[in-house]
Image (cartoon, rainbow, N blue to C red):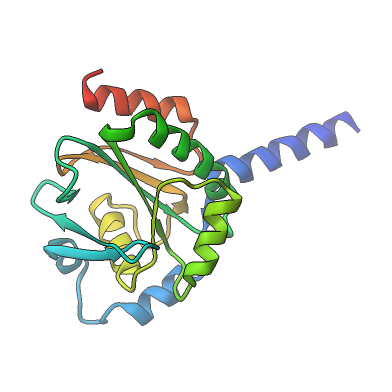
Length: 195
């Protein structure tokens, strides 16, 4: 009986902490991306326009160094690639909000959903339920943007979520696959900011 309990606990922990996998990612990717486009052409695109839930247009540029927001010079930018149905993504939202609150003017967190056709109402419901107090984007360019980041990190077509990618002034600082403790992310933010 004890052996079964221990094995069950290990299995549940592995599922929760390794992240979610998007089984539909290949099908959705084939629908969204022109079959003649190569992975290199996706990374070489100069600009991505993502819309926040408040209908603000965020321009994310991809230069030779990496991804950056025009309005975030000198700040750490974290792109949180997630899905509303993913338990580790749901758990990460509150921790990312805590970090956004701690580093107010030095940190920009942008949640980018991988879900095609999700409504703003559904994202607002996610934000309220899981206390995601940072910018969430719901744009027709989300999938293209996520694919470009995954390609730049050499993650392949299928990768676990949440995927958090940290940049400062276009330079990749670190990326995290699956659920990560808030303290680890905080330490990397402090290091990037020189604190």
